Amino acid sequence: MALELTVVDAFTAEPFNGNPAAVAVLEAFVDDALMQAVAREMNLSETAFVVPRADGDYDLRWFTPTTEVDLCGHATLAATHVLGGSPRFHTRSGLLACTVSHDGAVEMDFPADRPTAAEPPSALHLPGVRWYGVGRWDALVELEDAALVRQLQPDLAALAAVGTRCVIVTAPADRRGFDCVSRVFAPNVGIPEDPVTGAAHCVLAVYWAGRLGREVLVGEQASARGGTVGMRLRGDRVTLSGRAVTVARTRIVALS
Image (cartoon, rainbow, N blue to C red; front, side, top):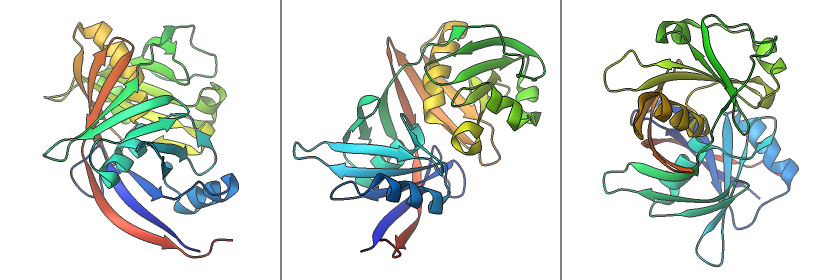
């Protein structure tokens, strides 16, 4: 038995940028432990496992190198890029409808995640904190300016002690064509820094729409690889958009 995977760089049109995800399209889900082992072997922030349903939709699950997660944007974009068309995914976070446009751009209908203001925890040692809040899974921290976000070298143990899945650090954009800049750290799920994070923009869309007074936004994630995420807030939903490029295909043969 062998397992075929496609590696896709998501939220970028250029190879070796954005966030790489591995996508496996299966006839049926294999054992959870095996999927976790494959994700650990791929050692990307997420590996997506896709199974076609009888109704024409798909079941979709996401694994980091250490755990299964409830929502992942860049691996969903990668799966849509691999499948093409207008796939609908049944996931732990409900139905996610996606489309690939004629020019290859992908749009994804995701749940919006409204952060609630809270007192910053004592473990959070970040410079220039202007606002702190918590969404469904993630903490959101606004810093005073984009330079602080770009230059940040956080204590990952301290961020893990915050207790959330991710800590999203953001500020107003400092580059033309963007509304906000962010970085995302997720040591609690085995990802020190995530290159580009679709799920984080479910939080960022709500926050910056409120701050800037408009519902259509563009976010820059300022990791070393970098990426661009389009956002359109629609009540309790957000349309995330971005591009993707296939960079590799791999075949795992050592399966038990």
